[in-house]
Amino acid sequence: MKTPEEVSSTIRAELARKGRTEKELALAIGISDSTLRRKMKNSGTFSLQEIGRIARVLHIDGNVLVI
Image (cartoon, rainbow, N blue to C red; front, side, top):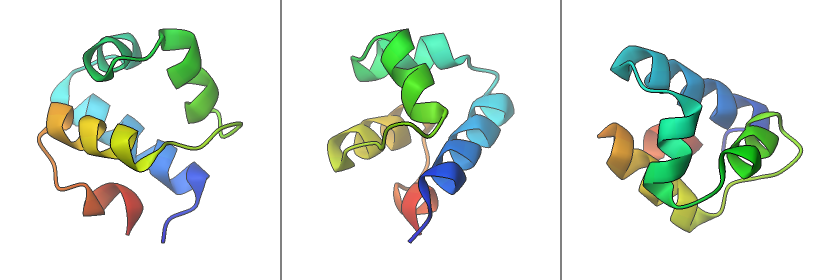
């Protein structure tokens, strides 16, 4: 299982690969950009539902984010 820091790093890498911003991702998964930023800075963790939404938006397998 990945640490919150590793999850955030993977999300950032996938965003860069896809040419998307954190703000676009937040909008697409239904959370505020400030909440996403907080979670990305490791002061929060993503729920399994959020991980699933992120994976769908980025067109990746959710396991990539957690394993």
